[in-house]
Length: 308
Image 1 (spheres, helix red, strand yellow):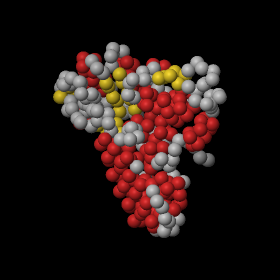
Image 2 (cartoon, rainbow, N blue to C red):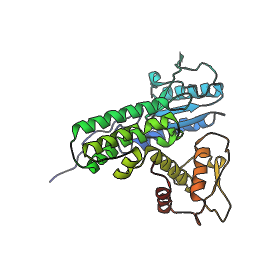
Image 3 (cartoon, rainbow, N blue to C red):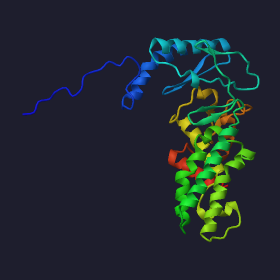
Image 4 (cartoon, one colour):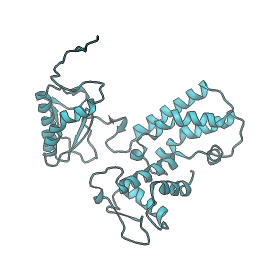
């Protein structure tokens, strides 16, 4: 007869949460919840947290330093040491003051770029470094794929490109998307230009231009894909499928019964995501008789956005 016995003794966890567990992420959110609530009480301080990364930003130097001090004292009280070497200060905008900030009695180094969840952010928010890095990695990956695989099937190469190259240049593309006519936008087309040319040459298929290659391979330009992603994100924000804080201060639906999908940009003179994408949205939906469901909206984009 078998009897159940304790297979392991219980252990106290003095700080943190179990690593690699299913419940770990939820437990960590519970663990730091009081810190986030205390930070939210600091006037003029904005916070953003993802797992064990936390960002504080404010136009008020005193509020920002107060937030840093609060994080430091909370971490000390809860036996959760901070990674001071990974703490960086990024000053956004040319008019940002040179006010010094400290953590643990040490000055926080000011940097010219910082990696946030895989996205390289610069003070001018141009994302030049991120785009240059993504394009360089995508070209390297493209050359490695062409060197490693031999085939007479264009579709096989397209599968490789979509699986291993596209994710490199499309990650966070709705955030860093440059103006369509800019040098950075043209640079983002480089990996697809290169790969589409090489695979048609390898498969002995004639072509006359980049747009012709895209048509033959049934591909869409990077510009097309970024624009579609931006419009889909805006759609999800409008219907509430994606969250954006204080959305009503940026955009609202028109009350026109003739144009039920028309949007009004609250700050049209401000150069941001909404002022850029809303005019394109309105041009596409001008003759739509009712508010489209997700599948209908996706079909509208596919049929009305140029391949290049």
